[in-house]
Length: 391
Image 1 (tube, rainbow, N blue to C red):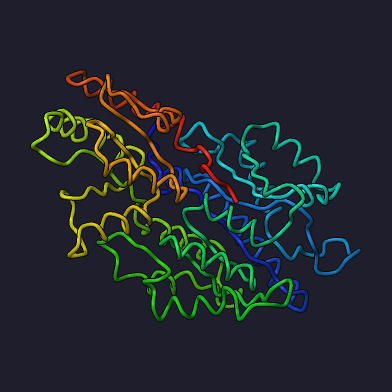
Image 2 (cartoon, rainbow, N blue to C red):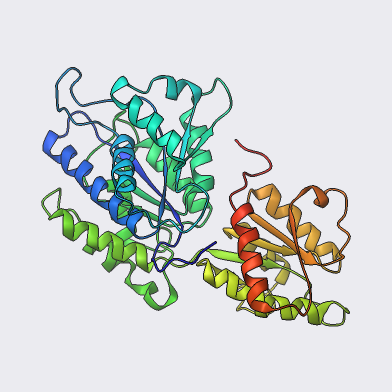
């Protein structure tokens, strides 16, 4: 795993939304141009994307040049174009694009897009996630998308976008709703992105998780990214959105490890985490969360542990010493579908169930620089594993 000098640093961004047929064609085209330009900047800045692939409804059927009512194929076309220019800055070996779809949906991909779809599949840029065979439920698709996405950007839309926003917020992940008055392709919902934009301006906290030093600037950053009903220059809007993405806090990596300093293994574990795990976590762009070391929010530590773990994007679980609490937290993380990196001191005997999970065994007293790279390599191979139970 290589570090990237880019703001988005390997995070998956989901651009989701739609437009109603009744809206002006020029406004819908403005939205497509905005999504296209924003996609280019996200990819060039080291970010990945979460998308859907299937049928593409258009404003006027049979009319050449009629704008599409959804944005996924505009994004996929942009991915193909940027990749062909060699400008992807994605820092991982796993694919930068996650497409969540169904067998039914992929059978409905138009001939117009089929060649692009097959070319992208062959490119190695796409990871395709299917929901259960025979299903085409929008709710199942969105639930699977939310497992992968780190940030949601909403453009128009109705009930589907509102459901996605609920899923992201339930995971304490940022939601950036744009103010374009596009409506929804299915004419449903209670205002979609436009309504959420007004709510976020009034109360940014449930929508934006910003870095502590810019935490008070949420509303101002969102207002700066206003489209003015499609009248603001695209370059200005995209620049403001990238500034907002830059202000979003790093994802959390929760440490599960031996913390009792009366246990013999404690000094070796403490040294390994300070000399190896901390630098590796920082290198991949995560913020450390370690109980007993970092600031707490609750008076009761048990609540703090499981609440922080529940809303973390990564769990690093060291089972050295075979502590029961570590196995409880490991099981909780696996059950929640949180990516888990399992590690242990060399010669640790893993219990039966955990032995089936890849584990990195570290050697006390070895060279920290070598250890960091070995841990990064192990994380790269395993951080993208699917959850034990998928929707």
